[in-house]
Image 1 (spheres, rainbow, N blue to C red):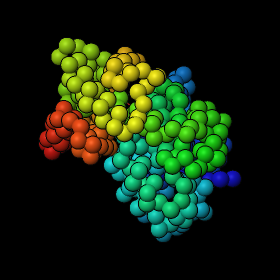
Image 2: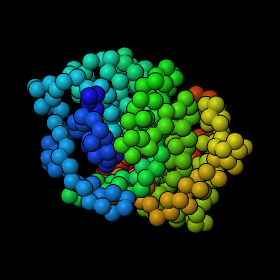
Image 3: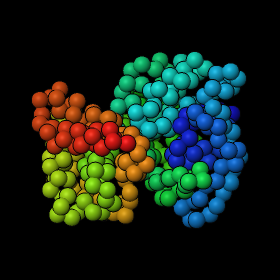
Image 4: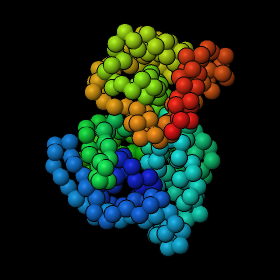
Length: 306
Ligand code: KPL
């Protein structure tokens, strides 16, 4: 049986572990020890408790486990490379990795440096951790898996099939780069503004914020054109991106976006993985990014006060 290591026991990592456990061998890996019994609340409100095997990074170094078939990295974007480095000595460099991060920072870097296959996943599964360490599976949504160079389609298909069997609906795709940038575009238009203003997603429709959303999308659309990322649903340029952003705002109106949750918990945000690649691309292509840069500076100032 192929074993799956899940490095980063946050909400998505634990949801993945709960989903896969009945079908395969799963080990959660974190910096701190986790309780043996892990609780999950399903979107239907059902409570489940499972015994999930977990080890700390330090234990793994002194008591190596049998080689994994996949290592899933489910940390925040800015922690992914350090997390991989922390287990690199005990994992064969040919092991397939699956990167579950937001943004587009860890994915190209790890794809370039890891000798084995690197799959990227983007998911719309909604999940959060409770204070007691349980995971609430708040809403189901599709997951897409592929690799940036389209060289591991068979592996992506095998993983998507296993996840779908585990009711974690997943599809292998040949355009994961496009999908990661698309999610990044939406995140760039929503997350910094809600985090800086302490509002839920739906409030961005208010006059006080809507103009800034449009200004962000104008810059993002021009940058994505330079990156050859097609506008969503075959639409045209900026308007198609804006329509997508308003659609997500509508669908998630009552959500506290992940970046707002980070700010409220005084944790570093994923600005480097979301705004960083856009600003870097704008500078490379000579496209304006003053609005994005201001958001990034404001977030940096906010984080400096934590
Ligand atoms: O993905 C999200 C997030 O919170 O990071 C959005 C789409 C903004 C929904 O809240």
